[in-house]
Image (cartoon, rainbow, N blue to C red; front, top):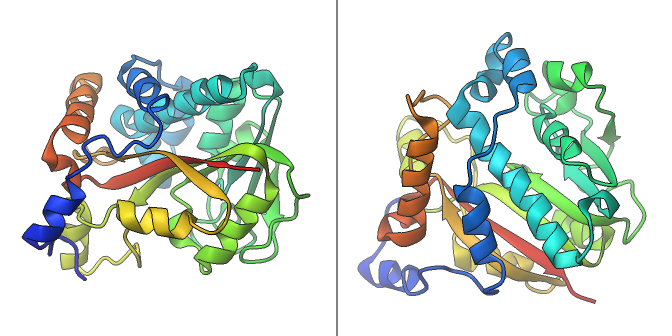
Length: 282
């Protein structure tokens, strides 16, 4: 089904659960972290400003969404595990340009592993310019297989997907590997999944830009997690306003407005992303 073609009945069904949260302990913390004012990473901005493919990271609005998402990863991980982030082992799965690995590393986890498919494709670490990775000496583990991860079972407390899951060739197998390498009670954070009824996705497809070959709804996300031992803790829409290419004069004010619209109004259905955090049960 093409984006935006939503029947009245299915629209009502999608809107029946305003918060979409399955764990009331997660949503308030997420709202608090997202609404806080965090500093930009000026080191990343400086490097990104010299490389056209990294321009969205030089744009405050573009970088800021990654800033508060990584802050949320730290805050919720500490709450969930009941211990300092300095004892948490993190995997940045499909690390790409390396900015998320850098941001997470700066928050002081016990260990960060970064990995990406060993490919010449433009979105792989190994197929593009990577000045952030080089400047900060981020070691990237090359993945020789499309979905098999070269890590022991139950190796990580936290696994991050920042715009990765929607690009894998074998979604069930990749999710199975994610569940395998997570420790019991480990967390899988999945961000930047393209939402099914996103207005930006609809425009992109009208222009013939099929960057994402599949789009996601809450029902689809729950379906793909079922049967692999990952339990949904929280799911939400994010980013109604475009961020990467638009320079807002007061980007934090626009971000707060955007967060309000996606959290408290039916317009969230048209947001760019649907995101979630899940846990591996024993």
